[in-house]
Image (cartoon, rainbow, N blue to C red; front, side, top):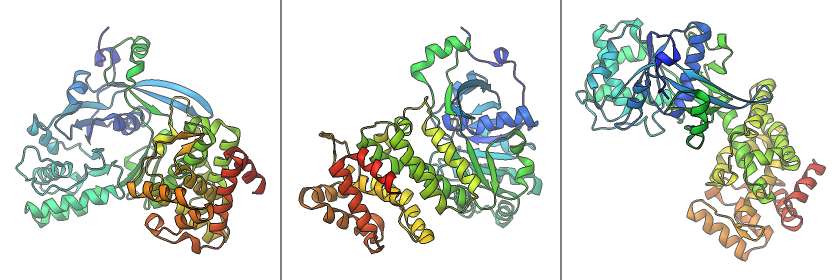
Length: 480
């Protein structure tokens, strides 16, 4: 059976307009798919040159397949379970700058180059003081990009129309702002001059971006079946879920340059991405964190099984739409759509997401993902969000470390584990709740100072302990 190549696929060649740092599963299942869709349906004509950001990677394999690979998208789409696949053809070639730095730097001379995208892991946007302009290559991703930008500035004599739109996808807050800050630091370190600094400020656009798609990656255990189905060998098959979201913070002109809306893609252009980041953290991540102790102590092991359970599923839907969404500032229709998308993602039959895999550091996750919704609900409604407090009570019981007589493999900071071990060994439920809620090392605030908060959590915990999780959830639903 032949390997995938452009003779087999018979795909077009595109103008090299995008430089991409990173060749991993996420960018290929997310950004490259979006580019592919815009090329196909909106005449974007954007070819991608992939730069391998570290000395070991997939560029050699990518070049052997002439930039092509097969993407499977599996999940719920428009209410239906769908698995579909296609060959993604936007990548034109890959470069390993550790083997051919000159080839990498030559991209600066390309007059058609307009965009830079990246996913070099959260640690990729970092400053390395040992990087120098004449390194070949620089160690850090920002160092490599600074060298390329400076070369481009020189080649085109600082022409304003040769600046780039830079969209990092690394999962850190204000990724574009941080990347720009480091590039300007290198400009100072390397004495690149005020004219270059001004060109970076004035003629290059650094976008903050938020990305969202679950990408399981290479389906190793299914490759024999997939190869028979495809009829060719593909060493770079990648799987992703159906849902996708790309929020790009930048000027209004981006909408004209990136024709995502023409294709019906879920790409949001905004001058303030914070509401979207907050929505994701509180609804998607917050629902996960809320669910873990409730579902697991109920006797369920996966996210999908939790949603499919009538009692636990109803509990989580109530949490999302009646306690989390009312604390957010986007439109009701946007919030409801995102909430429904989250539930569809949780029900994806192609993903087996274990609750215990989400349980790592649950206390700090509750603080960052759930507690803001609790406090905002109290502020806006002058009432307590009983479902979210029920989850907190369940979390306290979860840290007792036992389910149906079997030990729970708790994973958290040792000080957290030691705290709860001490509580459950010596204290009454009333004291356990009081000591937990007043622990400012956990929450940075004494939660007992909110009227009714401590009593609500205590009552929920007593009900769960005395009646069991199922009966406690039924009781919660009756009283809401």
